[in-house]
Length: 230
Image 1 (cartoon, helix red, strand yellow):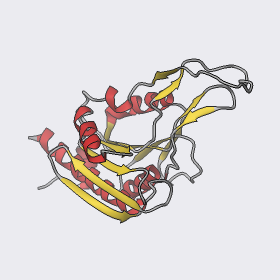
Image 2 (cartoon, helix red, strand yellow; image 1 turned 90 degrees about the vertical axis):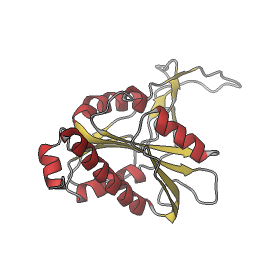
Image 3 (cartoon, one colour; image 1 turned 180 degrees about the vertical axis):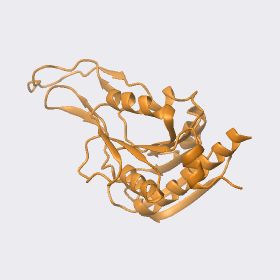
Image 4 (cartoon, one colour; image 1 turned 135 degrees about the vertical axis):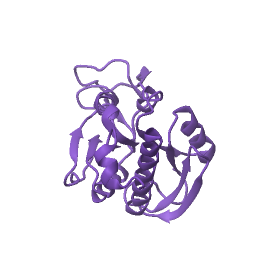
């Protein structure tokens, strides 16, 4: 008998789908911060679709203006280091990690305790944040799905990220084109898998592509479970 959703959840080593969403905030002082542009629509839509499939969902979310998906465990974070901590503690026991968050690559080297006063010029020193998917590169007990939002060479850069971070699947889209990738806008996506499979979607909404991603996550979890039982 094939592995169904029911016995996948019953016998799989991890059944929770762990989703990240929204931006991270990297504070310069008590009132200013660096961030990435993100509304959280993608991650929240994916979380809802996984809940519809009957999977337990943990949603690690940066600050957004969206109602939490009913039935999900929702963990609110601000910084990339906060998100790394929460993801790292949950990933080993999950069935699938879907990294839809727009995590800042850099943070200020120093966070000032008081508001920085206006100046003619200011030099800001940044240091690199730890790459969340990079820290989990060697982990193979769960499905890993990533995202790549690019301004150029989107397919090439997405494929590199897929391989470098040892992902099972990556969702690639592009900023700066005629269709905005932000908020509720309809846009274009390309989904690539580590087995070489690739499919493009044109002018599609986030709820629809979220359904495609959730279907793929379920299939990949089933395949991984079947391999571990062999």
